[in-house]
Length: 349
Image (cartoon, rainbow, N blue to C red; front, side):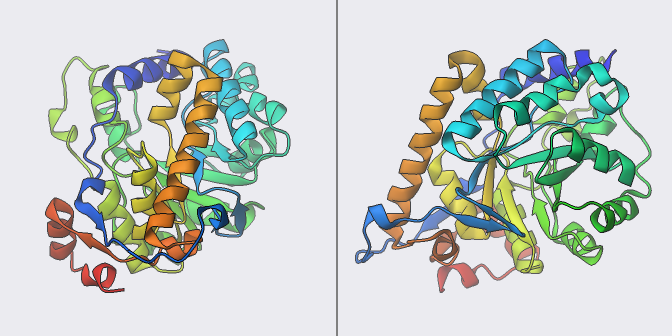
């Protein structure tokens, strides 16, 4: 099967499969503040992600490209929304465009539509330094995502089976690419062990890509004749992943993604330690079903809701939101306790 055709299949399966909803945010409860002592109009949503300053912690996470006209139109609509709402955006894996120049327009459209926006390029951990430089140049990117998708590749009938040398390649890219590098897991979460390895080779930004959002195990299993069902529930929840990474390597900038659909989810991700929050599946569904204008309205509504939540918590800035008290309960508490984390650092701050 061609890479372009596979991209189209992934979109169709993602829309039909939806979010699995086990992100862990239901286990997070904010401690109410009766005297917040601020005005909602004073809420400041700006955040810092590594060396990048973003006007909003919300951004459109990597989804697609490389699937011909259909994916070009999707990326065009996403870029229009990103420009209108002044939020960052990542494109999907650009490997297709490296292999076939005819697929470049499906990625280049993003910079054409949004010439002054913050845009992240995207490539897999199999990439060389030269590959990384080429995808950054292709869209004049402000940052580069390197995605990790081992389980997806294992299930994919035509997927990779050799994962040796990935950390070394990431290290070389970090050293030789002139934009910030974000290492992103694709839906299966990130452990403290992985975070330490990445930090040791100079990575400064990670996207935990937790279990609970688009389930690429289920998507790839729909493309198989012999289903590998044991991978369908594989992974670390988004909430637990954020804690694992942020508490273990505090100097890393963390992006919380994986099943984020509401401002309430986003607020919880930030309060657990994320500096920014990536949204993908729900934005894609809204864009395809209702169009770019509806997506713009939704992003504006998310910003409004996030400001209201921050007001209720007495948090004027994103940095203050990262310090509000909260209680972790249920499966997330059990997971973190078994993994050696003291959840009282959140409830008693």
